[in-house]
Length: 102
Image (tube, rainbow, N blue to C red):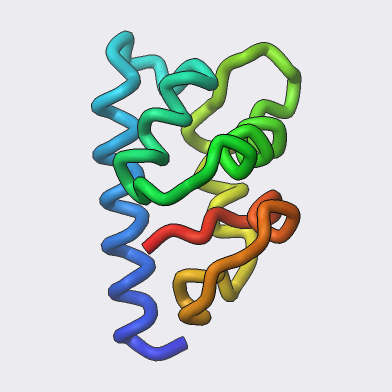
């Protein structure tokens, strides 16, 4: 992995963490599904409602309606080539594996 890609990943992790902390008003590392959708819309306004729901379904592993920061980050960076890095937009089904955010 080039240092340029690693730097971009690091910037993205920092950006996600900032957004997550902004929405996590209790400071417990957990946000609601609706808060997650709002956070993702801030990070990438062109997410569709369907894509957001698919992402929520993927990261709300216990169907509690809440999302843990560590689970979200693990999910978000589980694929080595998200659509934003590949330069293209993924379908809603493909987005279920990783968010196509920039």
